[in-house]
Amino acid sequence: MGGIRTSGDLVAWMQLTKKMKLAEAKQYVAGKLGIALRDLVNEEVMRQLREDLGIGTTTSVAGSPKGIRAKLKIAELLDIQINSVELFNSQVGSS
Image (cartoon, rainbow, N blue to C red; front, side, top):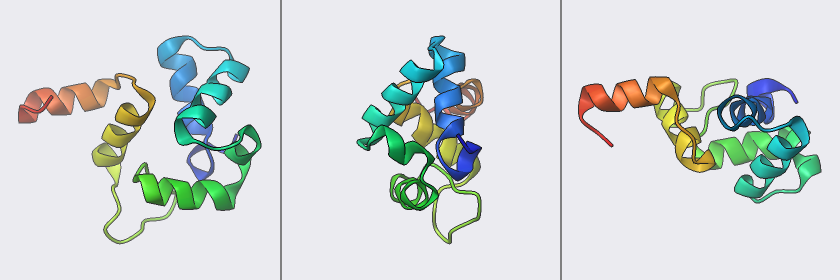
């Protein structure tokens, strides 16, 4: 899957948080991203999509979300809870 370079991290989040099998997790992520299943492993497609959605890239892009901000966007996009995001929100009083 390629981790953050493509969509491996997003698929892994679904496997960990929703207990999805690999094929189901890939299908879910592709659906949420609005792309074909085969594009999940296409570095060019995913790089542009990650920049557009602000969900993090392997190399920094000026002005794009990084760190907890990118994780927050991932949690919103995939409709999941990420512990570090929940902790951050509780500390800053966000929901």
